[in-house]
Each structure stands twice: as structure tokens, then as C-alpha cells.
Amino acid sequence: MNRFFINSIAFLTAGAGMMGCSLQMEEARRPNILFIMSDDHAYQTISAYGHGLNETPGIDRLAREGAIFTRSTVTNSICAPSRAVLLTGKHSFLNGKVDNVQPFNWDQDNFPKLMQANGYQTAMIGKIHLDGIPQGFDFSMVLPGQGQYYNPDFLIEGERVRMEGHCTEIITETTLDWLKNERDPEKPFCLLYHQKAPHRNWQTAPKYLDLYDDVTFDPPANFFDNYEGRGRAAKEQEMQIHGHAQWGHDFKMVVDPNGDSTGFHRELNRFNDKQREDWLAAYTPKNEEFKAKYANLSDEEIALWKFNRYIKDYLRTIKSVDDGVGEVLNYLDEAGLAENTIVIYTSDQGFYLGEHGWFDKRFMYEESFRTPLLIRYPKEIKPGTKIDKLVQNLDLAPTFLDYAGIEIPEEMQGESFRKLVAGETGEWRDAVYYTYYEYPSVHMVKRHYGVATDRYKLMHFYYDIDEWEMYDLETDPMEMQNIYNDPAYADVREMLHVKLKELREYYGDSDELNDYYLKAYLDHRANR
Image (cartoon, rainbow, N blue to C red; front, side, top):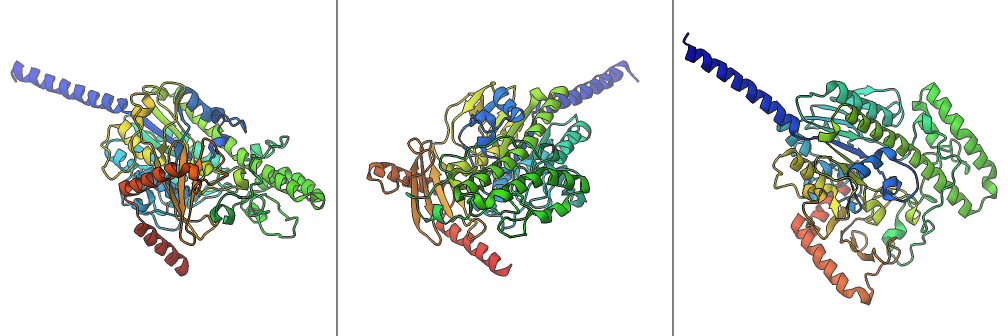
């Protein structure tokens, strides 16, 4: 064999080795994505937002070390539709998941599928609330439907397995195990770490059963809202803490002071002996104390007791969520992954914590329309960044793809906010569009759609009513007075109608689609 041939082989071999090394280095430079999402987490309960209800040091790290969005909103404030929007980057009326009833088509594109096809290792751990086996993931361990807080079942690659413990802690432990032991270090990863908490009915982990027992919380200023100045939609809902929440299921009263024995005591059957013992030891004295004085309490005092029982249980579940975020962030630091990992924390929508007297979500009013959004990426985002622009959950899928260097499909309707949060541009949309479809149903929030700008909001409630509402968030941030017919706002009303029409056309929505999905919903209910 001549020397030239030997040298050529050596050169080619070395070149191939260098090329392989270069490709591995290129893969390593692509950012990891850790997408953390909780369920029904009100932005008011993240201390970085400044409402003073509780402390969330784990989540607050993202605001301190990255960016916090103050006007992040959703397109449809209800669990499964919101998750479908997050995955597909398309409004509900295009991805087909308009409510919790309609099936979700996993065969359509979603951002994990695109990342998986472009060299990312993908995993989904926790709650997704979409029927069928998740597509686009190398590994999935998801709760079936809503899932259970205690000793929950999970679908692990489609196989149903019951796991012992508290759901929030199990999801965090599995996430850490995947990062430590299942992750391929030669590939960038996209990991969806999604908690069930703080979804109704707010069953906290055993270690926090007594948290806040020594605290009395004041309700929001409009807790005793009588809905004057608004239309039928606000008045005819069924989501009042004092009136619609359930003694057993929501307030954890094993025996109802009014004599109704149904409720949470049935769920205790899922607990193991130690869990049940701890739960009853924590709640029985509190319940007995309340029942002993119930007959002598005024209606207002009972309402305030209900608010405190609700808010304490809600905040207790968030404590475990925040613990988990802190644990995962600490691991990223320890493993040397923090610098090249984009971490996003959000919720599938906001939630009412007594505003207007309510719990739950669904409405386009601020507390459920707005959702927390925090992001950290040391390579591009300056610590302490604050973004006041109107972003939506519609924007997350294209943003993830943008960071990963993957072409964003034209059918995705959101916009990447990568340049916005990096401070490279100030240009952004001036209005967002909203839809809600699940009526008549639980909580009886009427069908509506609307538009919001940085200051104003216009909503149209339809189907069994035809009413318009408009609010000036600068002068009326709690949305207590409908100004739709106020002559002083005539020009604003006209502007909002024009903007609403433009956005409906831009996104492809219409009254015909509303009729189509209404018929599908009513047909489903009739055939159930």
C-alpha cells in the first residue's frame, strides 16, 4: 500500500472523526427546553407578581434570573383546549379542541413532533388532559384525564400503572429521574413537566396539611360582588365560592353541616391507611370547630369561612408545585445544564381566587384570561427582564421552535417572542383574540368571544343571549362596570369592533364556525 493512500485514509478517518465531533458539538449547542406547566395556577399566587398572598421562591427564581410577562393571556380559558393550543400553536377552532368534550386529533402537527423529527429527545411527564396516547414523545407518563392527587394512575407509554404517593411529588420525582438517568446527553432535550395542581379540589401533600392554619386571609375587594352594571353572563354563572362550591368535594367537610353526607369522604377511599390517618388528623379538628359554631354564624361569616378554606387548600397545593420547580432548577445547576436550558413556567389558564366571589376560570375577565408566564435563558435573556406586551399561549409553540432553529409551520398562528424577550425588538401585536365554547355545562359560563388591547376589552356573549360588554382596564381594573353603551367611549367601542372583525378574519374564525361547534357540542350531549 503506497504512502499517499495510507495518508489519505488517515486524513479521511480523522476528518470523519472531526465531523462527527462537530455534529455532536452542534447538537450540544442547541438549547434544551424545559416546559413547566401547572393547572389553574393564578398569577396572583406567584410572589414575583407582587400580590403578597404567599411565597414561591422556586418559581420566583425564573423572574429574578430571566423574564416575567405581566400581560400573558390565553385564547380559551379551559383545561384541554388550552393544552391543545399550547401544543399546536393554533386557535381552538382550527385545532378542533374547542371544549373539554370534543376529541383531540393527535395526528396533527405539534411542536414536540417537530422537535423530535429534528434531533431532540422529547418527553412528557404529568398532566396533558387530552384523550389518546400522546404523539411526539420518546417517553410519556401522563395522568388519564384529570387524574388523582393521591396514589394516582398514570399511563406510561399507554400502560396504566398506579403509583403510590402524592401526584405533585411523583411528577417531580419522575422528571428528575428522567433528567438524571434517561436523558441522552448527546442530544438536546425538550421535556414537558406538567403538574395537576392546583386544579380543583386542591388536595395538598401530607407535609403541608396544616400550612396556613394560623393565617386568616382577606378576600378580594369585590368578593361580595352583586354584578350590577353587567349583563346576564356575570349574574347567571355557577362558580361562586359561597353558593356553588360543594361542602364535601371542595371544602373537605366529611359531614356536611346542612346534612348532605355526599362529598369528599368518598375520595378518602383512595388513600392508604397512613395518608387517611394524616388527612383526618389535620381536617377533623378544623371541621368540628366550624360545625360547632355554624348555627350562630351570619351568612357573611360563613362566606368568609368558605373563602379561607378554599384559598388555604389552593395555596397548599401550590407549595408543592413550587418546591418541585426549585428542585428541578437546582438539578440543572448541579448538572451544568442551566446555561443552555430554556426554562418556561406557565399555567394552562388563570383562576379566580374570590374575585367577583368566584372560583374556576372560563370567562374573559382578567383573572382567568391572564396566566403566569416566566422564562429563563441565560444566553439571551437578561436577569430581571419585564415584558408588558400581549403574548398568548398561542405563541409558545412557535417560540420553542424558533429557539430550536426549526422552521415554524405556516399553519401555526402564534408568533415567536424570542426577539421580544431578548430585547432585540419592541414591535409586537396590539390586540389578542379570545373564544369560549363550553356552554351549557358545569359552571354555566356563557359562550363568548372577544378582543383585548393593552387598555380595553370587548366581549360578545351569544347563543341564548346576545349581549356586549366593554371595559376600561385603566379606570376599572376589576371589571365592575360595563361601559359598552357609555357615550364617552363611543369611539373606543367603534375601534374595538373594527379590531375584533380584523382578528376574526385574520385567524379564520366566524359565526359559521361557532354554529358548527355548538351543534357538535349539543349533539354530543344528546347522545351521551
